[in-house]
Image 1 (tube, rainbow, N blue to C red):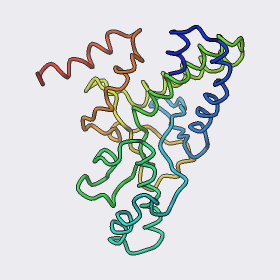
Image 2 (cartoon, helix red, strand yellow):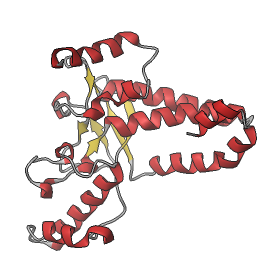
Image 3 (cartoon, rainbow, N blue to C red):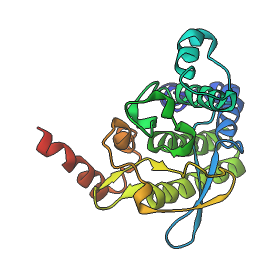
Image 4 (cartoon, rainbow, N blue to C red):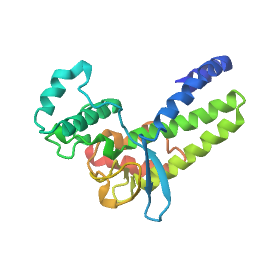
Length: 227
């Protein structure tokens, strides 16, 4: 939004005023609990982001609903884990969807914190590009270079971990259920979620791959048989 306002108005002072807020928003998603390190099939380690709420209680706005769902679980530890998954799913804005469930018919199997999402990482890729451009506007060339390099690294990571050449789509990636999310994970092809969700197409919506028309074209081919 900031970039669009600047493009429409040319108001550099506005950009200066809000620039720190952009850096603060980005740093939230770069925190240790949101970061996932994963090695691709060539052994190169990439860093991507996930949803992870710092909350393990019923949501204040939906406490009765959350407590009723958690009543299906036996231990307090399991209930607290579920509350964290519920809050993390709400953090995504996709609350609720079978996309986040190990068993699509059972909400107690929510496992959002074990998923590397296509949409979140595409949003962050675009954010890094935009901050890089805006940093240049305010004359902060070092910050601009840092964020443009970060966007390039995330672009490579998204392609290496989330792109599926067989389906020709970007797919969410599932971490193992017993994973320590601070370790470096090893990429496995069968851990990509092959179900079709609107989030698979977010890179097209954000025009994040405008320089790779071949990839966008193949991605769009999915829609053709659907009419």
